[in-house]
Every structure is written in C-alpha cells, then in structure tokens.
Length: 181
Image (cartoon, rainbow, N blue to C red):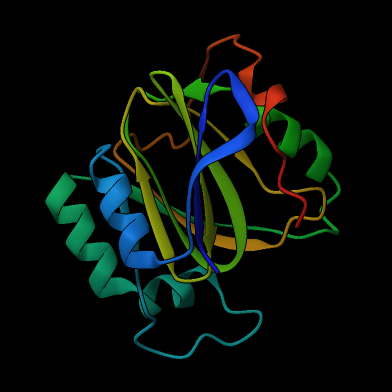
C-alpha cells in the first residue's frame, strides 16, 4: 500500500502527517509540484518479460506523459535481492541529490521509498506496484530500495544519457528512517 509521511527536517522521530489513501497522497504531493498517479497495464505481464514487453503494457500512459513533458528516453530497471551490487547501489541512491530534469519512475512491480527535502520539511513517499512518481527538477531527494531490493521500474528522461545526479553533500538522509522492505 502506497504511503505518504511528512516530517519536520529537524525531527525525524515524529510524523506530522501520514496517509495511505492514493487520492489524498496525489493531492498533497500535487501542491508540491510532484506528480503521483496510478497506472494499470493494458496487457498481462508475464514473469521474465522483456523490457519491450513491459513498456508495451504501459505504452498509452508512457506516450501521454512523454508528449506532455517532452521526455526523450526511457528504460526499464530491475533490481532483486540477488543483485551482486545491491548494497553499493543502495548507498549511492541514499545520498541527498538533485537532477537538472524531473526524476520520473513508474513501479511495474515491487516498491521503493522516495524522500524529498522541501524547505524545512521531509516528505517520504512509499511507491508500490502501479505508482508513478515524478520528482520535479532541482528537488533535493534520495531513494531507498531497502536492503533486499525488489522492483521493476520504468524510468523516463529528457536527457538521453539517463540518470545524472548532483549530490548536495548534506547528510540529512542519514537522520531519517530507512526502507526496511
């Protein structure tokens, strides 16, 4: 179940707001310029499906968002608990960073935790299968896939080179809850 939690940046122990209601999460995030949607596959996706088959199952939503925001590229990323570099990848994404373009992720399967650092607030969004999140460009954030990652996600980009991060050097991510999937 998707979840939104909001904290004050100086108090990681106390949740100021929490919701599991998708419409409420989307509305609250929308006020912050963050897109949060639910997508459904137009065709069944079989275990072991290729990237092309995964993309085909969500083609109409992908085409809509790509045209609307002038995105130029996409790929499919899949990480499991057996991935040999899972800990190194987790540590890389856990550091607060920003991008010069929106970070758009659609969770085909599994889950991950996006945490946004907005002004004096920290907004944590647990994304699960069927969730699309689009973090606006230059938004400070981090991502936690947990110690045993399990997700397949479609990533959508303006930059054809894909994921490029500008790390802030702030250690705020170390003070907030981790995703223990």
